[in-house]
Length: 367
Image (cartoon, rainbow, N blue to C red; front, side, top):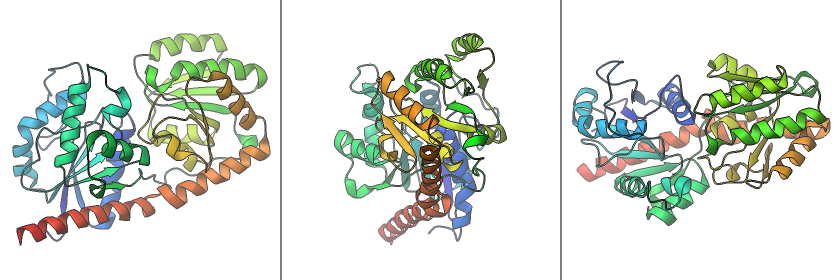
């Protein structure tokens, strides 16, 4: 039988301080779920039961896959040390791939997005998609963070819809407070991994055009990745109006959201887009591409444009930046959407109910 306060072993490649959205999600779960009477124990590439600094062997060119392979061998030892009542794995590309059901306790999987959504039927990633599909099917329940991902789980991977709950990522609204009004903001913002699929070149190209129409507009890029040096070199063309800041602290990131007129998310796909939600919590309108994950955010302070349509991106951005009444309407909608749908006071009880249901079902099977 589960302990009075059930212990959840949270398996995540990323951790705090986060590399991306999944690390932010892991950190938020660790902070939020004790309020619902669950003890959280994080196991990540940077935090294990054996203490920090444990070396994960590099067997592939994918660090998350290396962690998953390491975890495959060590899960029985993790189970012995932590004695969890429940496993919760954060999956998706960049997440944890489980090759078999963890021992001793039921498994909840969170699906940020799927390999099929991210890579289609590419031969190079097809084996990983096969492993991922099997893992979602042998789990006891799957939390999909968006309707788009839930559709892929059922259609592409054959996960029974009855085993899927759509529960979005929660946002700590007490951390991310609204910034100033239209007149107090002057920045166009990008936050994320500096990789091609996140649309960094498209963001810079858009700012180049918009900076002519809006001479007081500035831009910030927050994040790390392979395109960092190229972005830094390009920034020199703008005489300080484009800042490439690299990885920033939580406090600095909050300030970036709060001084931004517009958050631009030109990704080719997202699980849901945590950075978009964080910007919305700060009352910052979001302009994003109409792709899986981001599609689910349409309305409520979010404007969408077709993928690879740079003229549409520029037109939509100019319409928001140049119209104070429109901006104020979107800003108010963005904050209201977060409070109503994505705050931890809304999301936390939904996750707690999944935990309770899975633990109760397993207890009934044992009885």
